[in-house]
Length: 122
Ligand SMILES: [Zn+2]
Image 1: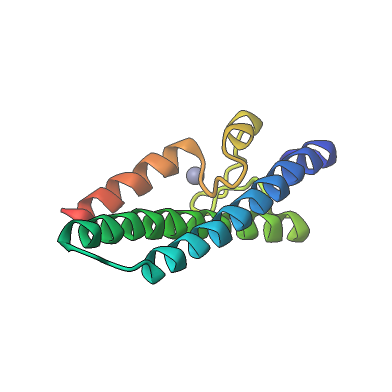
Image 2: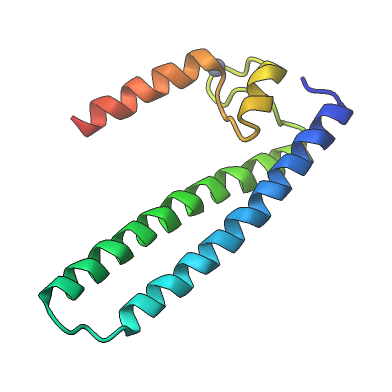
């Protein structure tokens, strides 16, 4: 398990990341609204607006997902279950947590999980 000092350090990283994500999401939402308010003069403009708002929407979705994972990790820090793999209950190495502070799985379970996810997509 990561020690108190390490958790504190990772918590700061997560909180910092959370702040940035929230800011970026609200900026993107503003952009989407702006794009929708724009006068569409011709088909070309329209295509441009659609693809722009699609990209912005994708970014918002991606960031919201990451935000959920960060909240989950922060909750686990409070509960004292942070740094334990959700699948096999093994302690996730600190190196992995440093690289990805909201990691839910150890490296092995992560690759199993990703294989399963890929299967679902096919
Ligand atoms: Zn595991």
